[in-house]
Length: 203
Length: 200
Image (cartoon, rainbow over all chains, first blue to last red; front, side):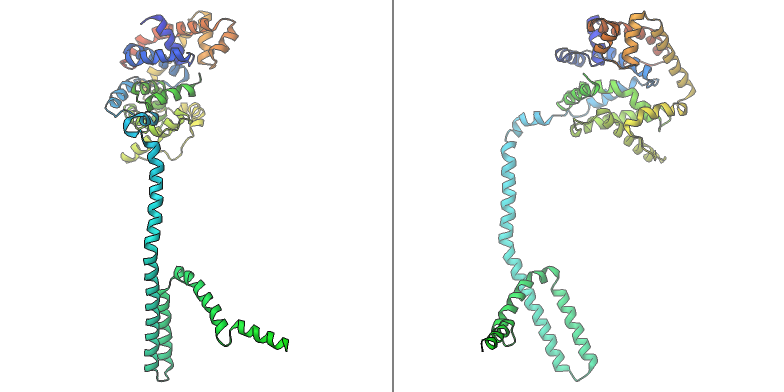
């Protein structure tokens, strides 16, 4: 090997080559086994001086190189982007995002009414069960306190299993609205009570 | 160019598909990694196998390597994890206390007396070390000063040029000639210990 190349290898090890020299030497190292051996020997001297050297370690680089030769070659993301199959990635990503968002929106629009209907149906069934239970309780009532207690516990159980917290939360506005409506139309409602008070004051 | 920048450049080349650039990273760090793994795997041949496995894992994981990180710190973690997996697979106790990569050098100094190498390997290593030191001592003054400032003090060529009051090109030449002289003394000894310089 020429002294000039060996001197460049020595400077390369120390990170003292300029960009052009580094590029040249990288190509040389890729093609020249002797150059790699030389670089390995310079690294070995540094390892001995630092106290890192271990006997027989120089075998390792060749063993790793032969194992790596069987591995697939990496392709950087830049190179992948430049390749033909990924040329439309810049367009596919936002389109795919929009498609996912549209699918979710469509799913909500299409499925929500069905779920709502089912919930309404379940609520209705819940009422029926409660009513049936009440009727049965009335029919079988014979003044027995234990029977009344049994009926109450049955009612509670059915209501709890049919209406979970989420459903109760969703029904809450309905109950509030219903209560307001009822208070305005039925005797004893709050609005009516206020009117009466107002009427009394005017008098 | 700093070590970190040089490593970054090599990593980018590997990530772009240049396998030979990974050979350079192996040449650079093989001694350090074997030394690290030898702390936990005391059989030298076994430590070399684990080191090889660690390098292969590092190669496979390199596309996920964050380029802003230190390559050696990353390789260090892979080395420790590969060692732990190896010891567990052998039914042996893995290291229970991790040493941070930044503290590794300090730990090396403290643990030198606890080295687990075989007596033969220690003798050979001492011979190699003595040969290198003797070769440095025998160098002409200008070469010795240049190599000592570079290898022991870690100065850049520019700093050495200022310290020795000479051009950078002269520093580069002196360091190269010093390395050649040391290598000339070292090679027969390495060959005598049965080591083939198939990688360097």
